[in-house]
Length: 324
Ligand SMILES: [Zn+2]
Picture (tube, rainbow, N blue to C red):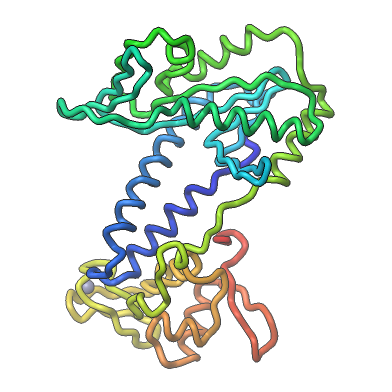
């Protein structure tokens, strides 16, 4: 059963919003674009693992995504953690293409179009996670439970070329598509439960309550201020011109496109990157509209929920689409 959804999709959403709202020639655009591709690729890889894991029994396998825990004031992150009464399983996903070559000395290389580049060993990373998780479990008075791990390559077209005889490399590095079968055969090697139902529940509560969500202050991360953004609504069709609004209809003078809801994306982008709430005044500046009356109507059309008294009134997304 999936016990915790991931945060990574929120990050991808925020980076996507940044790219929509920053001017074409903004100094940070290149960096944000490359981070976006990296996170997007990672997210696609993890989603393909979700797809593979859907074949696991719903009972007895609790799945947590993007878990961030603290052990000895050191934060460690696990892409995918599976809790069973018999063992804990860490799955580190890698979305690489081409050939991953592991040589006799356990060094990792990626080969793309004949060009070989050394990459950092995912083993170091996963060993650190195991070590941290062990300490974390111990510090919470949870009985000993074996920690197992796999490194799963999510791109079905990549090739693993392994020359190493290392036991871990041979047995713990695999393609995501064989993950479910491998987990099943791993489970069949355990006879004795390590955790009782009570202890399992305790561990579950600890994971959720001690999870430290990553900071979502994306403007700070990229040293961007609200002045950097393009104000107003760009035509979603031709993207060449900002739109003007008249009687609550948006018009593009460049391509003639008309829209009743061209502002919706822009306001949702505000929630993703600037603040989880918006005032009438901030909305006016963001959409480049001087009439408070028009802004209020646009907010109502999006079913934003008003909070606070008249002087300090702000609007938040309806609960169903709450971003933060
Ligand atoms: Zn247009």
